[in-house]
Length: 255
Image (tube, rainbow, N blue to C red; front, side, top):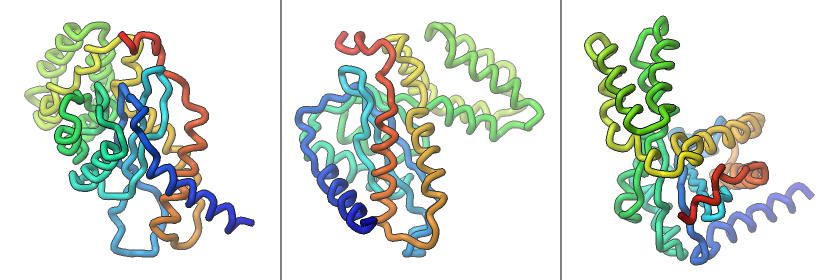
């Protein structure tokens, strides 16, 4: 019975990977590369991760768009994923894509969907900045970073940004360089409805979902194949999708 269920899920995955997307219109993409605590049969695949895209439709519904095993920093892997989406009918990309600054995703999407704007994840950015500062001042620093992206207007956010620089610029140059290098794509979310900001300034929808998936995959004993791991991640992600809520203020999306 267990083997039959596994075969069923694999067939479901194969059909899902090939599904037609010509009737889909995504407004937002969240993208990330997620690693799991699973021992693979192939020792060469130590750096393997799963490339995840979650999308928001025009009615505000969030859904899993794609899962592909690849290499996180690889533009080629993300090109493969995005090109496949386009080939299956997703001619138009999202208005905004949200992701970590280190992804090959940005190089890929700028070639596949030229009109899609970029938003760097503030959760990842915060962690990267704090990593370059002493632990003793990290709590206070974190508050000042929150002052930037939680500001009620873009103008006030830029004021808080300049305050951060004036306080830490001299003593913690690397931390400030980390903040500055993505300045042009850190404030894109302000150009969208304020009701959506809580959703589109970070990749939390991916982080929270796959934290649960990680717990489940961590219990896997022994070595497994690449396909078995992909099937397991797909199945758990679809289960998690049932709990996702629509974007707040989704009625504003058509505007």
